[in-house]
Image (cartoon, rainbow, N blue to C red; front, top):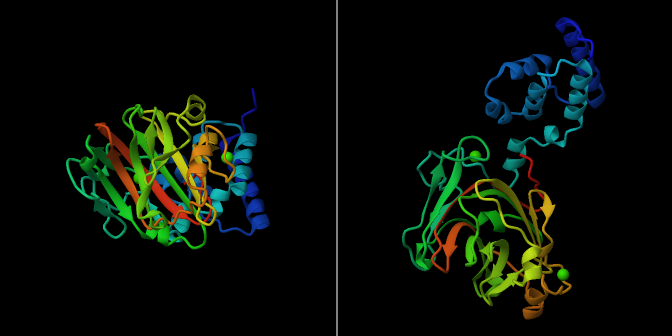
Length: 326
Ligand SMILES: [Ca+2]
Ligand SMILES: [Ca+2]
């Protein structure tokens, strides 16, 4: 068992290490001040701590249970090396065309009209959408969608700036989603982008055959191909769990990438080389497909009588990969 130093000695060592690291890095001391760290230790509300620049200090607060000075110093090194400290969520969010954690809207209300429009393309029915406090990936709020069974029971929140505000050819989307139940066999959509290069038809992301998949509404092409091999190359989201979804659309060459919980999903890649069971049908049906999304919609649309409740949180778009860390 490690020898336990008196608390004051630990604090002295701690402060000295901190001062040395600060001098080396010439970094602002916000969030790494020993007093702030002590405050973080005593702060029972970890979520509140995460919402400020002391995100990583919150992890030290957890490590506060460990009365070993060496481990605390490792934790300090981790803070100094953490890219998150230089890329605070609030600072990054402000630079992005879309970045919404749904905390600024009241529960029960639609999401802020400064960012989103609630839309029912073509027709409307029972679908509902509102900011919700029963589930949240960050903070206390998320966006809740109660999707109805019929096509006209669809509902989306839409933002044009989310995609048109991203300069260059590379469009990256990051969001967290949570399903109340597993995808079934029937085709459903929870994300759609109107493609002005494809007759205004939607480029969609949703579920079919139990897995996450893309669909091109103009010709109903699916990614992956819905063969047993293709299905096995995607994944089935876990009901009741938050998943991080990252989508990459290369608008210049028509390539797609999809990451779930930081991992590239092999079956959800279009790379220009037609691969049997994966992107083969998608490419061969439309070799010159070059998407140009003009809106970004989150919600629910069912084509075979499927109702579902789902939640979204921490939605952002940009011209480079955003990652799953907030
Ligand atoms: Ca939130
Ligand atoms: Ca391929």
